[in-house]
Length: 216
Image 1 (spheres, one colour):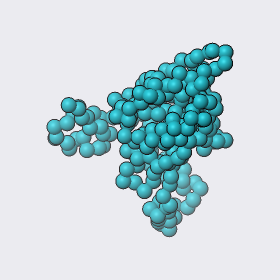
Image 2 (tube, helix red, strand yellow):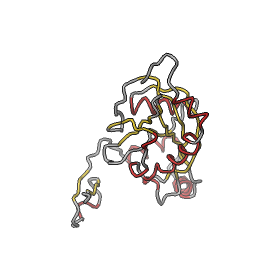
Image 3 (cartoon, rainbow, N blue to C red):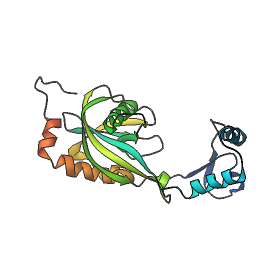
Image 4 (tube, rainbow, N blue to C red):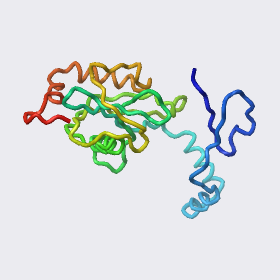
């Protein structure tokens, strides 16, 4: 049996809710003044009715956006991959996150995300494919998330959960079970199995033990 908690802000539905589920008010950590925002905008543009109408129309009729993310399968020489778990989730997922607009490549984004979320350095970052992600934050929205999936070879570092990740663990590729993975990442596991696990030539470049016998 699962426990359900409804979260809301100070001015949300919480004050009017009388249902059976537990509620929790989220405390604001950043305070945004609408008056201050309008003052800054008006310093650059005249606060006319036509301007406001134009801004509303531009927002309402803008082109849908595909937000770029990266997801990474970190593989070691033992044939294990590194999975991550977020604090509020029970199932596991691949390491990943949004692309940095200032980075020079998606490969650089992938390397950064792995280091930030697990403390691990990786190399041989290889593109496997891309797909639309059924992310809960954008369900029902015109904007969507589209991710690039990479496989990367473990180089060094002690894997530990960091940033927005609670914990990480190594799992044998042969024991990978989609039932243990969050639903939104099932499509990524399918791509990984198709483009990596079934590609013996590529797989051997990642899993074959090093010549000097060093193992992670």
